Length: 215
Image 1 (cartoon, helix red, strand yellow):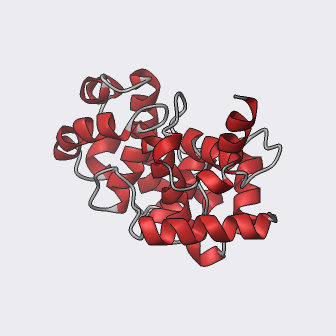
Image 2 (cartoon, rainbow, N blue to C red):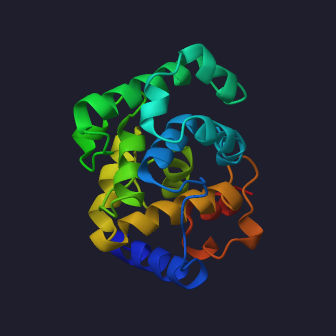
C-alpha cells in the first residue's frame, strides 16, 4: 500500500464514521480558547473544562486577566498540571494580547508563538480551530496515532510528524484531520492497551499488523 493510498483510506474512514470532529474544550470566543489551550498542556480537556467556567466568570476578557495577580489566578487553576507556570503564562499572555495585538488573538503562527505559554502546538490549534487555517497541531495523541497507522515514517519529533501529515493530507482537510487523530487516540487508539478489536482501521494499521505478526 502506498502512502497516498493509506491516507485515502484513513480519510474515507473518518469522513464516514466521524464527519463532525471538533475540539472538546469549552469556549465561546478566541480569547477563551487561547486560555483553555494553554491550560490543556499536559492536562486533560475534561479537567480544563472543569476549571474554565469559574475562571472565565472572574476574567471574562484579557483586560481583567491582565491586571490579575498570578497568585489569584493560581487559585482558580490549581487543579490542573503546572499551575504555577500556567498562572504566570496566562497573565503574561493577557498583557501581551492587549499591548502588542490590540486585544485581538492573532491568526499568524509566528505572532501567536510570541505569547507566553503558546508553543507551536497551541499556535496551530488556535490557527486551525479559530481561523480555519490549514494547520496541523501535533499532541501526544496525534503523534502516536499517526505513527501506528503508518501515516508517518521514522518521525522523532512532533515537528517531523506535522510536516509529514501536512504533506499528505489535503490542505482543506487539515483542520478536521487534526481532530480525527486526536479523538481516535483519545478513545480508541489509546496509549496503553489500544482498542484494536473495535477499531475500523485494523486492515491498514501497521501497529495492529505488527502485533498480530509477532503473536
